Length: 599
Image (tube, rainbow, N blue to C red):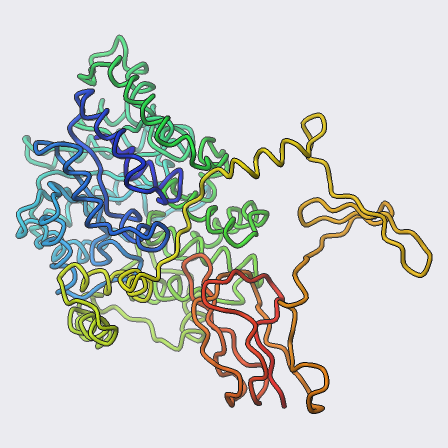
């Protein structure tokens, strides 16, 4: 299967790609003889509403038109989470399958990141009942060195046997390694065992990424063990965080008993079209590289660039190496869920918090819910100290109840609450809108109201030209000033967030005086003013107060969003809101004054 237009986009561009820009490449790939495409789902559902101001259902319709009526269009689903980070109720899980069938999809690949088969039973049945092909998954990864207890061939065989025992209907079985860390020998052993316990006609598919540098060897091991299909991508969305390129795998298999059954010259032509389509998009350098540390901190390619794009959004990309290193401890203590969305995002969010606030000082809510059992059973028991910490911080007790059962009892989840949100906003009650509201919540409503923002990162050619003009011998020239204070001259050079003052270097933050206002205008009544400051960078998601409002100590004033987490900023003291200095959508930095309180 060609993954370039779904997993490729997620793994390189954080899933932020406009539909009109890539459709010519789909047509060229179709003309090259390829007819099996990954066409949506996964992060490519929410991202269209969050970052592209586009409708994912309209994208699927356009993809079907470009690929042709006979193409096998496949999407990715996350069990009871379907296409979001949050798990859903039964009626939304069913609506997902029905709508994807309506909008031209042929097959849904369906996985659970915890390998909790209970999360695949109902979701898989809905896919089949909707008239779609169901590709059920066992999710793979390599545990960080020194860990054991799951993610070996015995564990994967037992998971597959549980799928068979549960009677889940399927058309194919996929062994999905989103982090690309499963060692080739384990891939071979796992698929060899699967071939023995599955019916002889069963179709086995293998999926991996090049992130750890072993994808071509792992693909070959899968084929040798009896896999029927592998996933490949196309430049510029291949290698690095993506699947290996079709051309690279074709070359690796030359002289072997395997044939990709493609016209290689036509594929080369299609790749040139694809490169031209994407030439204006910013290509993150980490998307094109093998990361040797990934086996210690298994971050899937599809989550890696999505998170680095968000770090860039918040101007904290320098934290990335620390966060990746912190992931190892988070995986070790979290119960060994497979590092694939949504669990990979939970790992990254907790690693992010451990770096920004200190180790285990602040439990990320999704990570905490996972270790407490609210997403299902983890492969091994999480660290008991982390479970206790999560329970205390989140105010929730550990549970063993099935997520679907809890979700069906949750009055905030399901079709009826989604309908109410739509009705309250005066929006049309279509099935598509209901699903958008349920899966994307406030951001989905903003899209439907015409208030969505665009966060697609393209190359700024004017800025690039200006940067070229201010470089010397290939190095960017700092902005230099001589500042005179009380008759004394100070030489200052500014480059990014670094300032050099008379030969000494300092890390600095510069913002306008207007954004630093924290109280009433000069001349107002004499009152004590307390600032409400941001503890971390992020985007303003909600402003909960207005000037003049009375607040109590600890009352939420602003909600920030960073790394797909919502974080309340509380009032540090009781009083009257004297000023609100930010608006929804505004990016803020650590320590920035968001509001002021008079006491």
